[in-house]
Image 1 (cartoon, rainbow, N blue to C red):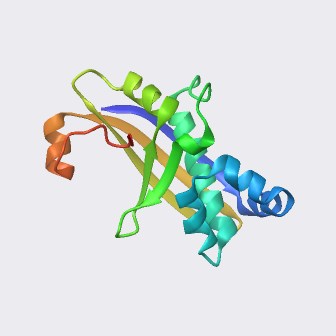
Image 2: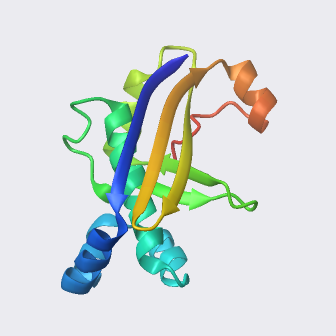
Length: 149
């Protein structure tokens, strides 16, 4: 069952200008330490930050129109599996919002797709709910997928 869909398109040049102008102040406000370490290790640093910024915006849209209220940027974390697939986890107020949107006896799931083609970066997020059996078959455990404790 689909709960929400969100997408966002970011101009990488705008993120590059923001990084030049505000530097670490912008980075610390928006990105987790793990996201910073990942991006700062890449040659195309601006594109990496732009994709993660777009992912956070897309997730806010998928969570619904009131979702920004009380949710901090760093409560939305973009990471990668060992195979490189982008994944999104949420904490704090974002996790509570996701739980509130998820029907009883269902497990939330966040799917994320990221892409870039200069000068743009794009993210697409689908929030869905699946039964505990579906989640166990996919990931081996029924836990709130996307919610990090």
